[in-house]
Length: 452
Image 1 (cartoon, helix red, strand yellow):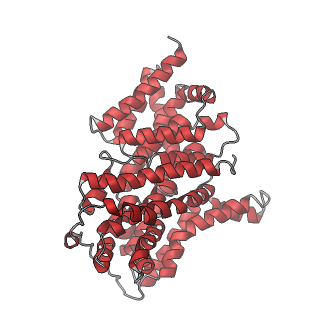
Image 2: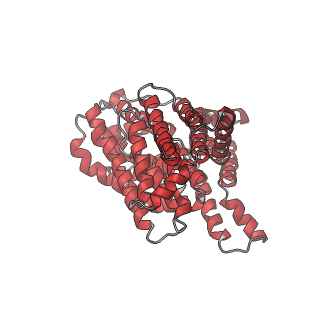
């Protein structure tokens, strides 16, 4: 058998093994990715020593760019949540507005609050507010809950520093600021469609209203050591918007200043996701923490609590980098690139399709993105005019497609809102599938104006 064909078959077998280990054997995605990557190297005849070396290098390469970004974003979210800043944003957005505007208001609030938070953390934090608003306005719980989830998932699916888009930014060598800009251009209209508009259409399918008295009891709010002032809405809003605004300023500034000059150095610093997030963390530390009377110990606990869920995600991202490195070491990435050039499938559509298939099979958007970028990233070399930022959004939006029973988010939404499986399919799954398809359409439309 031809060596190239043999390696392609081994690559396909590694992906199949990965899917079976996660879906059938119920092995943790980190371990499944590691076994698949190392098994591919050994089967391809690289040798044990070189196989481990390639895996370790790929693991480190993935984390050196994604780890600090995700870590700082999570700390920022922890301070925003623990200080009451996130709750302040949600309360101001919803306020005493008429019932018909509640889906729009909570979608906007969730989109903002979700930018620095992991999805699960943001969701659990906002659920008590959803129950309170539904009870106060005497509306169906999903009338508030569905647009809330829609707003959160736009941030989670398309915008760094969330794990999937951050990983894709690293894999494709994209600019973070431009990725955020394009993500917002695509994401804001989709948030409107999948949030308030879908809620209005889908309300006929909501089914029996859940019992609002059985809602989750929010955690006791942490009280400052030295109560001074409650969290300011303006300062909370600045905290959320500071990283993307700085990165956008940096992206525009570096393209209009001469390299080596002082202004260029300033804009280059702004363009760094690590430095922009660090600036926001320092700002939040004083503006939301110290200003409100929180002690250093309390702020440390806020940050630590936010970092808790990140460990498993970071390991998955690293192992995904190891798999990508193994595909490169065996030459499979070049083979895919060479063959794909002759295919009639546009690379943006291919990136979305591979990520979507893996998402449907694996359930995890992060794992789907990790595996998909390893397969599709070589296409950038074959298409020099292709925007890496749009490849990021194509892969990340594909990894949102058709969430069902193998996705933890599916069960989170179902249980917290007291839904049946069929109700969850008619709301949660429909909403995410719509977001994924519309995101693909937005990416393809934007590609007619944006080049590499």
